[in-house]
Image 1 (spheres, rainbow over the protein chains, first blue to last red):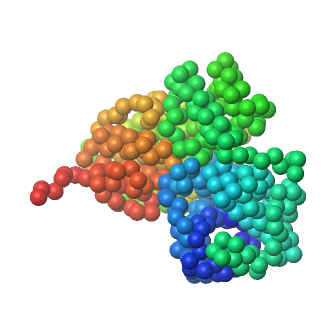
Image 2 (image 1 turned 90 degrees about the vertical axis):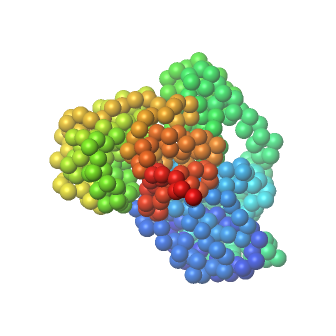
Image 3 (image 1 turned 90 degrees about the horizontal axis):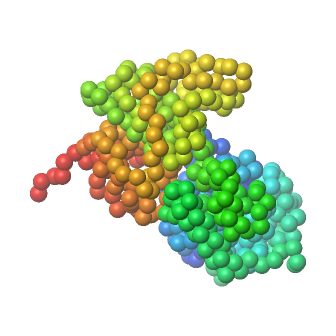
Length: 181
Length: 287
């Protein structure tokens, strides 16, 4: 999942709708300034029945866990299903960037992946959504009307690669039903 | 949809083989060894360069790398990720002042190895810190990197004035005692670091993947380099650091890097958990 402006609210809504026996791993990117304190995992954990992790390099991705990209680092997926980090150039002025996560996860997981692009004020994630779609993954965008900043989900929709557009309050229950149900 | 041609698992396998062949070509031709680098971000950087170059495949890029040295230098710069800043993670430098400097003050001479120093911003950060702590005259900083081009830039110590403006804030948060502008001279739109800061820095090229121990250090800094290595290479490098450190010497890693998966956790005590400062164990406890 990827979000920028308005992401905290979006993530709390989605994560609070997931059951504690949710069987998939969740990787999420929230655009943050590099000098931001890494409080997001702690904040999200209060709304989420699943363990929320501030991951380290080479952390093993486990089902039923939520992994939050740290400020100042791109978070990627290695082929052995561990997490990788990079301080390479910002993408769309962002580090972490949604595209970095989406491209790497798309390569590794292919059709076993669902990607969600949420509220945000730039185009990060759109190219990644297209890539995941081409890899056979399922792609979801938050609806413009339910997004605090619609540019990010709209850019993804414009690629023609979004499988499903959903209002914010419907995304959590949809994932709970499709993945856990 | 025609514009969304599927990318199959086989396509990904082919891409992986092409990348391995590219890395083999780089190693055979130029001696730089990226074969044990972590795949995910390496792959992103190769594909980024592919898009930028307008070449049609990684195989074509491999061919170009073999015949076109300037192109290789560009790719090398992509692969080694030379993104750095002065006092990157200011809290780390503050912790270094508080946790490590008091111990260094008891040493007659201090040898520091900064592995993966890139364009040198963090080298000058450390030199200034040691100067302010009254330690620099008995210190020697060994600044190494795999890439000779960035070492040349590090040696020059010339940075853009725009960038340096942002470092002032880092410097203050890192516990800087004066003003960062005391340590450079501005010229047009760039700054040059004070020549005196270079008096105890030795620059050398060193490849962590292939080169050997760099002797008897009191401090090794290697921050945000290991994240690009696979586990096996991380293990090799941590052993190399362990062998290069004096007993009681300090190892400083990037904030997402850990000894957890390297099999070398036992050799070190943790001095600062979140800022990744470790200390090589003094003596094995007798049973």
